[in-house]
Image 1 (cartoon, rainbow, N blue to C red):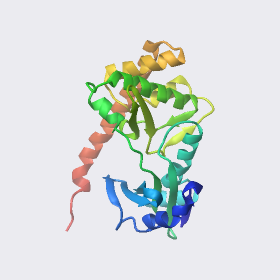
Image 2 (image 1 turned 90 degrees about the vertical axis):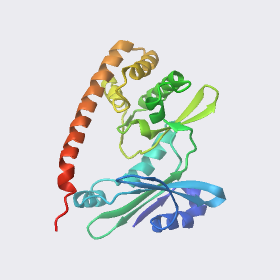
Image 3 (image 1 turned 30 degrees about the vertical axis):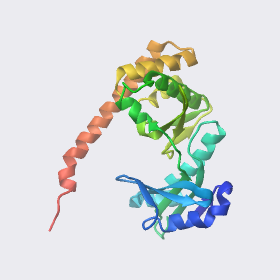
Image 4 (image 1 turned 120 degrees about the horizontal axis):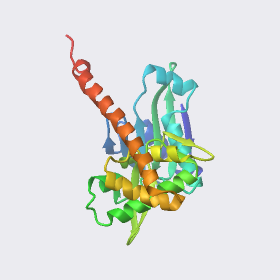
Length: 259
């Protein structure tokens, strides 16, 4: 077993370890997905903690995460620290734990502060009529530009992975979540920058607002940036659609019961 804690939360270590150890039987379910589950726990001084339990990986990855690659839990913990040091907001990391057996990694957990927020970027995408939508898109574009300027490539820059909190009239803060797929660079070229935005939406008007603001900050031609982003978006969407089609074709076979 590997356990690492943010020194700021050392006084609550017993409660954090207990949350990891008794994850299945304690805590309040916040989000249950096909692969991962998030639960809320209370720790010292009334702090609300989110604990993410990662799905036990397949056999190959169990070995890989034990000997060759960092686990998703460890990457999430380390990447959160790196983001905060670079001035990019994310829920404060608390701790992570990996459990192993002779084969490799089994259960793994990542704990962070429960971040209060008003909505995710998904809501902005789904409801373009949302009050202040264009302002939010432009501020989101500035947030992404700052992230790129800091050399951060967020590979899961999808709508559900940015939390948004209104801090005053017309001003918002953005927090990245689901952090385990990132790369850090000295510099990021414009092609890769636009590629990281390709998961957001296929709505052209939304993308035009984002690239218009990004171009202003980067001193670039907005039409050129939109063209790059649109090509990246089409490529991503085509790949996504093919993958979903294949899954739907295989689903009856995978769900078939043999007696």
